[in-house]
Length: 205
View 1 (cartoon, rainbow, N blue to C red):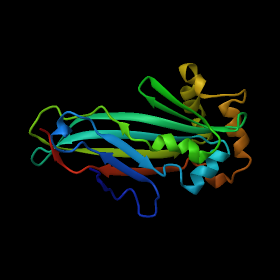
View 2: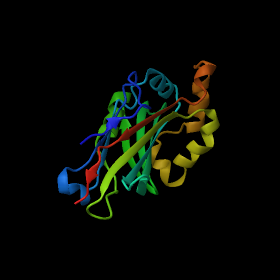
View 3: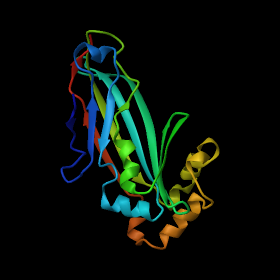
View 4: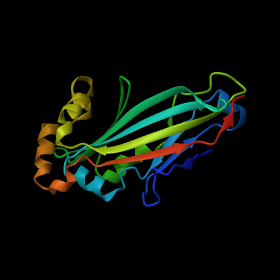
């Protein structure tokens, strides 16, 4: 089942954010999946990516139990996806980081093809602790275009074990600095969009 879009995801936005909750009694033993579509469809985001500014997608999923007047949160999970254009190889690269685990999706000739693996259902390791309760999931997504003030964060992403995500000799910092000269200053403020989604309430067990 999919949740109902929250107000933060406006009607004008093409982004679709869904929570797939296992049906019936399976909800107590199987974990949900998160599906996002049109994640990079925003024209400003695409222009910034083409000019060397990486885009970060930060996900957070919460599991809540209904409990009288005040609900209880039973757990949460977070992960990030980084998409950037490598001007040396002329490829878009996408990398997902969950804790200390890194998944490199590889290089893609177009931004549309780079977005495709990001739209596949991603299973989250959250499920109810006890049977009989009433539960629901909340998912939050922040899509942020990194600006020049985020160079340190970008370097943390790519140093050490993250280095294989980058191909070619041109550094990410150089790519960002080169992109600055081709953009209007009003685009350099760190584009950020926020989306929320809540699943329908279900009974565990």
